[in-house]
Amino acid sequence: MKTTKTINLKNRPKGKPELTDFDFTTSEIPELNEGEILLSSKYVSVDPYLRGRMSDAPSYIEPFELNNPIASGIIAEVLESKNNNFRKGDHVSGVLQWKETQAAKPDGLIKVDPDKASLSAYLGILGLTGVTAYLGLTEIGKPKKGETLLVSGAAGAVGSVVGQIGKIFDLRVVGIAGTDEKTEMLKSEFGFDEAINYKTTENMIQAIANACPDGVDVYYDNVGGKISEAVLFNINKFSRTVNCGAISVYNNTEMPKGISVQPFLVKKSSSMQGFVVFDYADRHPEAIKQLTEWLDQGKLKYTETIRQGFENIPQAFLDLFEGKNKGKMVVKL
Ligand code: NAP
Image (cartoon, rainbow, N blue to C red; front, side, top):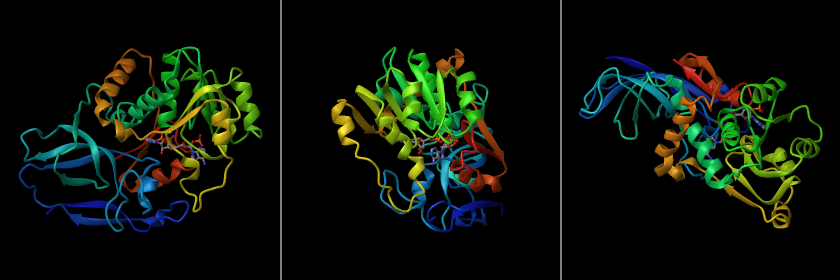
């Protein structure tokens, strides 16, 4: 009987997650049932939203169970198949468990072609990351040529794509990120017009005003908290905020008190709307088609931070909260 290593959720993290919140077990891989495929994990996506699933607070997606495997987007190779739609050697993408090898029913898995793009890209720009950037910006941000788009978490997986799409749509694009290396990369590699390092800037309200002299028309918010409060002082009449994520408060044990957003929104007839990529599942194929086209035309670029080894998956996840990634963080097995 073959065995596999698995990563389970050992504790529900209090505040910032730690390595001790995860544990590794080894278990036998059961024989394949009819209709199942045996998968070897190749690339594992680590994502900030997994933090929400580690707590048991109600959310848009159910919590992980304690002492059970964690799951995320994974690219895997088919080792054996008892399903007519999949053959040995195929590659698939979908939400799978943090296991080196697993037997799975292929419901929800899609085939990906390693000859068309690198396998890791199907977790990033051609996966949920790219789709989140494209649909969040177009559906809620509703960008118009000549407007100013401000993006927080700009050097991360979603943010770096949002900014580039803003440039394709002919907007002025400004990014906010946590190191000078990242702000430089946004301008030199990804075509952002300006970028602000929020860790070295004392007055974010003024810095945003300087970088966005015509105000902010679309704010794509990946971080929430104090950064997003400073944006409110710079929004334009009829501006739109895409609430995509709030990583700055994911590890808070109590919701931080902030300024009231309502007076800002009323004064500027401005709107703010939460975005969850899964709500637009029927539009994912259209988004992937558009992203693929832009990528092929050289209009979109992407960067990745690739860690090596199954045992390093938890650390790669923790490092997202320290800003140790540029672009999409994935782990190669
Ligand atoms: P990511 O941006 O690649 O990685 C996280 C980044 O967040 C880090 O690199 C770090 O960059 C920044 N960060 C960490 N702590 C921070 C803090 N306290 N304040 C400000 N920035 C901080 O991750 P991603 O996968 O692209 O996700 C970005 C956001 O989108 C997350 O909030 C995520 O939950 C959300 N998201 C939402 C959906 C949806 O459907 N709603 C889908 C995908 C992702 P710095 O060095 O710049 O600090």
